[in-house]
Image 1 (tube, one colour):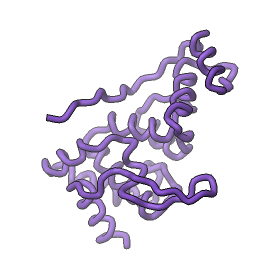
Image 2: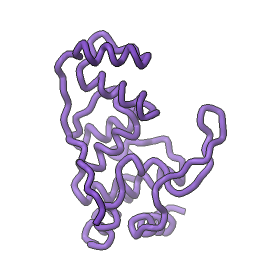
Image 3: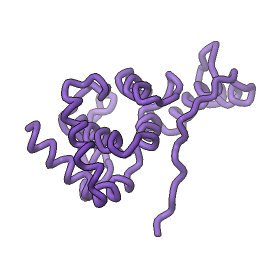
Image 4: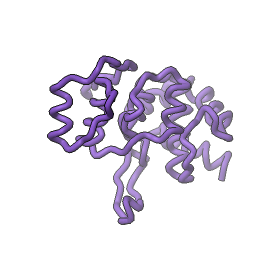
Amino acid sequence: MRDKRQKVPNKIDTRPVTQMEKDYAVKLGIALPQEATISDARALIDRELDNDEKASEGLLNYARSKGMLCSDYIGNKALHTQIFDNLELEDKASFFCFCLYKFHIDDANEDLSTHPKKEFFEAFGEKFAKDVYFKASLEDYIGEELIAFGKSKRMVKGVEKTIYGSSIYTRAYKEAYKYIQDNIY
């Protein structure tokens, strides 16, 4: 039996940053904003420790349209995980398909709530949320894994790097990829 990881809660701490977090940020070389909250400090610290980049405005807009509470400074990996952990199953399936599409098409628009193909992804979620085998496969993913799939080459800060993403051998991946191929390509 596999271990269960703790889901990322959908909450934010708006209390002012503590001295301990200020000191830790300084030790890491992070300049905290003047009015930083505890969630802001944690987001900036986590981004540094996780070698993460700031989440895009599009992804932040989508997260907030789905009721996510997060710092403006949250990292890309962290926000993918928070979104994926807190969406209802139909929206989770739609978001999964959307992430797969973004990866393969290299679409910079990360706001699913206003994306031109929004209905396409929602139709996928509606169809596959009812499939118990798809659901079980989807539960094997962690949100941050939805940034990249399989082994690929990407330009990172002007340098070509090999990226090892999440599995391309699951039922969830295969169904979503086939759906994209059948309806977009």
